[in-house]
Image (tube, rainbow, N blue to C red; front, side, top):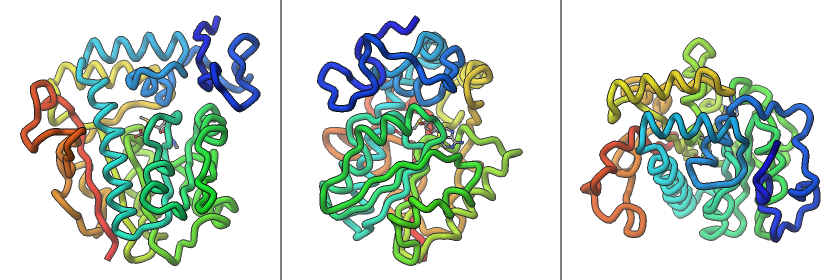
Length: 294
Ligand SMILES: C[S@@+](CC[C@H](N)C(=O)[O-])C[C@H]1O[C@@H](n2cnc3c(N)ncnc32)[C@H](O)[C@@H]1O
């Protein structure tokens, strides 16, 4: 039984109709018995858009690796800083693959704060994410947002999608965002090649904004247990060391600090106070980087 009154769409003050909590039923294609990566992440962020199976798996993952909620929070902060950075460098188009259930500081919100005419295309393979994103991620009137339900493992479909062609001019710079999503793609699925296909489609001046879970700052036991828990989720967790993450950038040129431990990517007051990580933050086991195409 689905029990959160505010789940699936913050219904208390919702302006969008389909998700009234009292009569809401999950869409039939949705298997709520399987923990889903997007809804587990929502739980780490303190959201309500998750089901019992998601919560159980997320709680087990947090027991194995207590820094997980901090990692999720600092990842959102990185996303915000990186989008602001790209927009302030003149990038006006964003393709955000692995959008996640809408949370504070979404890509269009941050980008359009810098540049109201920024155009954002969201891509996610989870129908719940796509529905939420369509309902909640409203564009500034001067800009554009649209949502494509598609899979990162099929870059040709993403690049050829009419909604992308209608919103983004690939002959102009784009920020391609792969934030906390590539660790759900296995090497055997061609993780490096498919990112290469996406990079190749971008014009000079484009940016790759990327974060990725890693075993490098966690104990061996935490990493192993986290990986085990995700084996029964909608996608496996593929933690990569630095040497596994860096090649995703291809020949793009790193900017700022390069590929660094997630909270250390251009820290700002209000997010990370100094370049010395506070107590507990050393355990945030993920990398982040932004690089530009020459
Ligand atoms: C951990 S969330 C990250 C959300 C957001 N990028 C952020 O960093 O806050 C991962 C998202 O990637 C999506 N995802 C996972 N595998 C995917 C795939 N193969 N194709 C597209 N989206 C995927 C999930 O549905 C989820 O919304």
